[in-house]
Image (cartoon, rainbow, N blue to C red; front, side):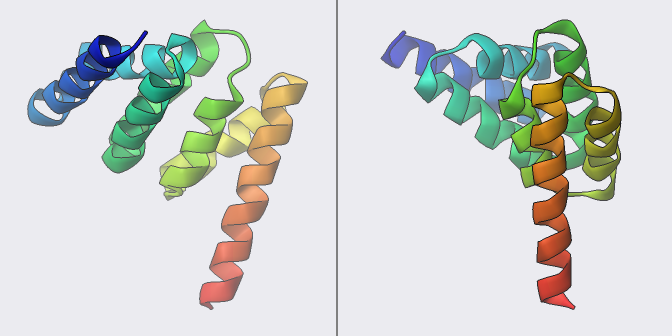
Length: 117
């Protein structure tokens, strides 16, 4: 894909941060699912930085596409209560690959919580 595709994802992420338009956020989820490695990384960074605002879009992405452990990992990186609820949903209702990724993310978040106590 190259530099042009990466620049497009950067522009989309910036537009999403400025406008909050869900369509731009969905394009970031699409980049995670269908982009090259650089595009996936850039989109993931924007989604993680957005925190809870990204969770509904990730939920849509998990429903619309085949298994995407990367989206589950992004939820783990967000780490908020809302992201944990979505991880719990995926852990109990997702495909085996997604459920395993969600369980790993939840264990990691639990370990972080224990170490901060």
